[in-house]
Image 1 (cartoon, rainbow, N blue to C red):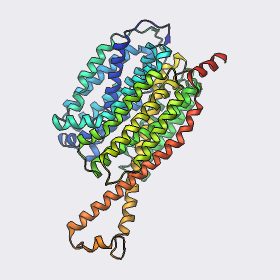
Image 2 (tube, rainbow, N blue to C red; image 1 turned 180 degrees about the vertical axis):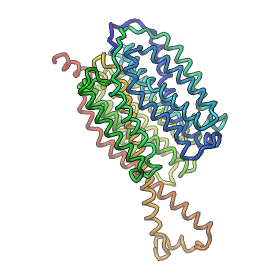
Image 3 (tube, helix red, strand yellow; image 1 turned 90 degrees about the vertical axis):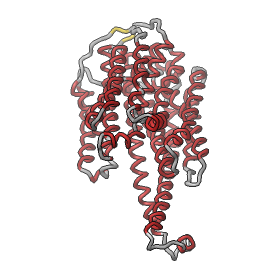
Length: 505
């Protein structure tokens, strides 16, 4: 475990730029490849089901290796871990861009996930270490900016590169960013003594199997009709069993893979719980909007990116503001305002319709972006406010893992709910399309029910209406969830008060 020996002078701007680039690059790759999947599918001769492994392999590999990053940092040092991770990520990106078969592409995406897993949590830990406590708020504002802007920018940047160059450039774009971050990381001087803890192989194996099984279940559940599939049932049982065995091992091992004392810190515990549910609320929204705009509203990929861009602008504004005032304002108050703004945005999204103007999407996204910046930065600051520095590597890894797990659960659950609800609403609407129904009599009287083209057009309209109803229902669920999550803010202590309580204890 790393133990600080005291702060040493650092080239803070250069290191901050390097970790910001690494964080953004990693977060970007979670979404940038999504819009390019149809183009990849043709190039590598894959089916629609097979090509999704390009996304799944990256997500599963990153999820499995994220908790390992804390141990690796303790054994080899953060600087060495970050530089190896960056170079491996860049090389894997090159191989992805030159892949000619599905097997190569999936294999290299697996390597991308393995090397990229440490970039986000270690970037957070480095920023906390090179900045004094009074600047932790500003440091977390920078970190959150990189972690949040990647997924927001991904679809529009991926669409631009795919349409104007090639799908291969969604991977090649990582080369200059990764190399610049690699060079910048050479300025980091570690001031801690590096111990060489023994790896709890059984603990890591159980946690890795639990996370991998859960991610596979969430990613493939909708394709395989969830628990009607033997694969999904097996993955669910494996996830629960392996996680229980992991907890038992953590209690019995002399040197556990994850020290459970980490969660004895009240702020960190509730910060992780809040981050899990916040991941559900925020990232599920990001996954719902692109298909809504492209499939139902008929927006091109680039225009979808432009319409959703105000969300990133709103986040930038509040992140910059929060970084300047967080040391003078109770972070919980900022989080409360952020959750109120996010709730207002989701309530606005619950009013979407097929006749809406794109400005409603842009305005609601901008408001949600403002809320995101006001929530994520203070949350990251509060989560580490009273955490012992010796837990910082493990803490950063677990915080990232828990937040990403929440995002994965939210995306899977909302997507499944959306699809099933759309089918239910479609069936209900079709039941009402009868000539004896006065609400639709005039519209149906002009249709020729023997004309196939007319029936196809009518079914397309029903599909569109059913789809919009299901999206609106999903946004209502997110709105209610945001309201229910807000009181959890009160369970965390403000940094000064928390520090005082800790000192007395």
